[in-house]
Image (cartoon, rainbow, N blue to C red):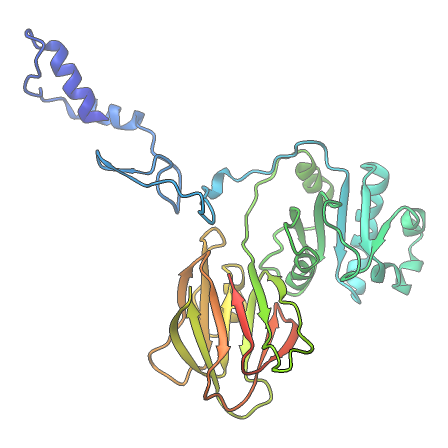
Length: 359
């Protein structure tokens, strides 16, 4: 842009109107022109123009998995005022009872919102000791995890606990997850940035749309069971969404695991060791980093593949782009079955012929 401006100015000053030699500009003038040229603030993506040189340009692809956005520009916007909120409390923890009662009392009486809580929360006998809770108990909406569907019923979520409480909130939604506001009231707080001391002011900012967002990706896992030869007991593929990681391990077997790993249908390697971790950037700070992997910023669209105690010097943690399809299956020469867990839940056995598709 600076070069074009100099050429145009030289052409205007030429008597014949033809391009003349560029005049030498003072350094100060060049610096002023440079300061007026605003660069894009995208931290981890190409320029929105997507042009390289005078002729090169990225062709638009309708099958694009995601569009990377500048994290500084991700803001929460309400199309209409939020009316319903889901409050997730850490169960069997007496230290969270007082903040829970204060929060639901404020949401119901001060903000006139519809508050959803788990049925297991109201079954806590310790809540009967709080007189303030009696006045709002009958106005709370209840549900049971795994039975009732909360899709399109919740505007945003408030978590009271640690990282495990937030993972539980994520598991309640197998489609899009409403915005989550997590208060640090547990043992681990990697994902819970808010303090409860001034919760009224912080929740008010969210309700008014004055809040920044951190978008976090989840892994979509499809369990494909081997079809019996007689065709009986055929099960439909099971789909599970996880926020942290999928862990494949050898379980109680004393033998090393032998796992085949495929990337978009191509065989990458055979993992021989204690197991394999496939994690999101969010899960990279959990089991993956304990197994020797690197931490990944949540705004980076990637998937981390980490072996657990590999019996090889050639396979180390690798990062693959988000949107690829990973397939995990037992190697034909595997001596024992494997076990799989999703965010530490739904632990199940992986036998010969079974596959796990992750994307």
